[in-house]
Length: 357
Image (cartoon, rainbow, N blue to C red; front, side, top):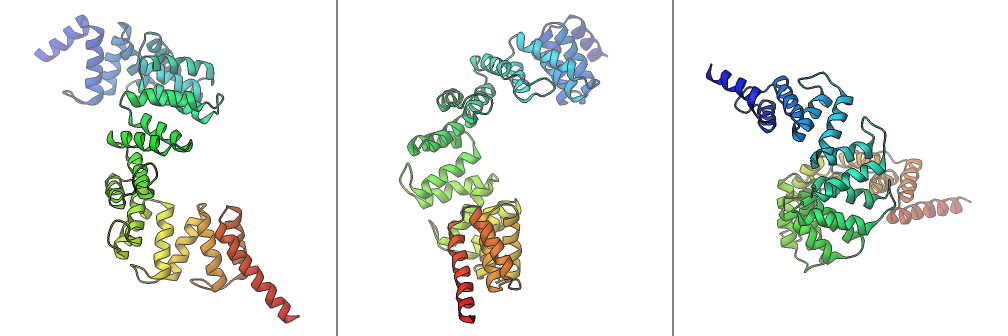
């Protein structure tokens, strides 16, 4: 009874901020049972009182049809109102709508205007979005200097994504020291992909002193957080004995972990083990199936291995036409080793033909 009276008083006399807070409480299921319908009611009241965040929250529910009938037009009007009221989240979201054409006509100029407005307020998503737009150069002329400027601003505000994107550009521009610095910043802030990239620099010795043990340690951290490239790299380091004692069984374990998550390089490496019998019982047929899997997904080395297996009849019945087909596909995809193997196969066939003549 007391609670009901308090809610009634809050509804009639509370501020728009209080109304929005009540909406969030109901939407998130804090204190009261989750109810999108009640959340929408409170957001509506907050929006009516001029709350920009109330408008934006109500827009989300209208867009998704949660607690209210789905109404994309109303959602758009509310987002515009919230953006015009100065809410950076709404401004950035409006930029996204205009750049993607989501429930509105694409308008690059409007997208840039709203992203820029949000970016001036330090909105991380807007800064990164502007960086990506100028980096890709699809909707505007490509401009790496502008991209770096926006990514740098995001990075300086503590953004892991901003640091990662800035590092990626510096890497492309041939600045390994700069790339390492920002990959490290991103990794420190929890960027898992940046952890993997930092590991590759320690492994290669580009931009810093080569250190296999450090690389393995960083790969391990990223691997435990689910990065499949890092998991594959651990397997490779165990297989080759880099920074740790060589252990083919442990290598196979890590390749399997990564392969189960769909990493093509890990599937390929696991196929290599089944082909050679390292760390697993030799099984050419299984190796063939795995090579075919990665070839079907666009890995040129998969076509190379299939070509060799068809050529020598390993794991599959020998078939010259299939061998040529896969080797030619690997060559088309840019595999240099496939060129050599294709030449050997065609030269061998030419010698046989000459001997018969």
